[in-house]
Amino acid sequence: MTRRERLLRTLRGDTVDRPPVSFYEINGLDECPEDDDPFNIYSHPSWRPLIELARDHTDRIVMRGAAFQGVQPDPVAALASTETCLYRGSRQVTHRLAAGGRMLTSRTRRDPDVNTIWTEEHLLKDERDLRAFLTLPLPVSVGTPDLSGVLEAETALADSGIVMLDTPDPLCLAASLFDLGTYTTIALTEPALFRALLDWFAPALIQRTEAVSRELPGRLWRIYGPEYAAPPYLPSALFREFVVPYVAPMITAIQRHGGYARIHSHGRLRNILDDIAALHPDGLDPIEPPPQGDVELAWVRANYGTDMVLFGNLEVSDIEALPPEQFRDKVLHALEEGTRTPGRGFVLMPSACPYGRELSLTSLRNYETIIDCVETL
Image 1 (cartoon, rainbow, N blue to C red):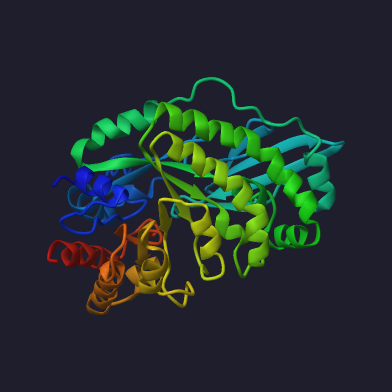
Image 2 (image 1 turned 120 degrees about the vertical axis):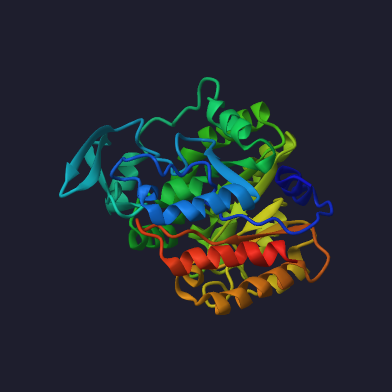
């Protein structure tokens, strides 16, 4: 059974020779050790063995942006003036956007030794900024989607894996415009106003999802953002208001063309699992074990695993911190819980990946432990 066949059979709920295993963002295709860009952490030699391990031994799931350029979208880039500069060795990007008689500004920072983007200034600081933003014309999704990145990745992967189309939901785009405290305050105290922001983003995003799924039928998708409306950020009642009406048409568009929709939601799941299940997604990730999450994988499998493929249950913090002999117990426990009862399928996967320039030897050994546990089942 090829790695591609194993993944596709798992998505369909068919039997497989063993559970697939993915390293999530680390796939052995997108990491370029030879690239000497100072912001490329994977050029450090400590990463090469892990990159090769992912390339040769994992069931590769390679993410490609569906609604925006890149995996992490910038919802205002097309509307704003942008300035990029180097400051104290870091790359800073500043957006300025005139709206409703106000000048809205955001600023991000990327450090050369850390593979993430920090938001130092959020675009919307208060309710007045939000009202000004809503005076902007609705975004329009026009033209034919550029599918070349997906098709090129599929060609490169051949039988070693699949491409996963990656898209935010309207909540992700809306919430990321604020710092977390301002977002939760406005969402709780002005839900109608906040929903107007969701309605601003939703039409173009849903249209884009439909267009891409029509051109690329039968693919796996990941929809991220629902966790913004889960406890402890917001009560689960607001999940039904801010997530369900907006994600449901995205899932319908994906499944209409034979695709598979996977919901991404970190942290606590217990109080929103019924609502997620009611959306009829094909998968759920990363199902973090307690204490990061609040449900055991075996419980999710027994109660929801008939209809959803479950992805995850390994914590990246354990990969980075635990001695390999202790981490092996975590891997075996996840494999046992993910396959204990009948279900549609299980993919062993970490919740994230390390993002520092130098990969520790402990992390490498624990990734090797994941592969060893799966391949010796």
